[in-house]
Image (cartoon, rainbow, N blue to C red; front, side, top):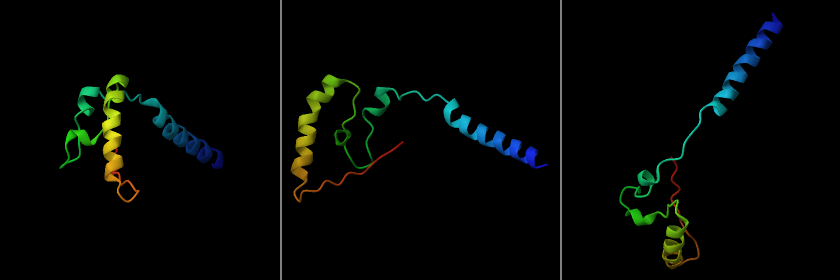
Length: 82
């Protein structure tokens, strides 16, 4: 009986572990995430791009704005996920 329980437990664990690896997730299309912004904020609040040249062009002003806003030396960032 104990070996059957062990085999059942092993099968359950293997199914759970394989579920984490089985589904392939594709990157979101850039046109869907480029203009996304939290409610109440303009789209310029985010610096999201898959184009290195666009990032290089936008980054200095973006990070300069962060430096200017950090008057007390700290930066508060709302972390968004999903």
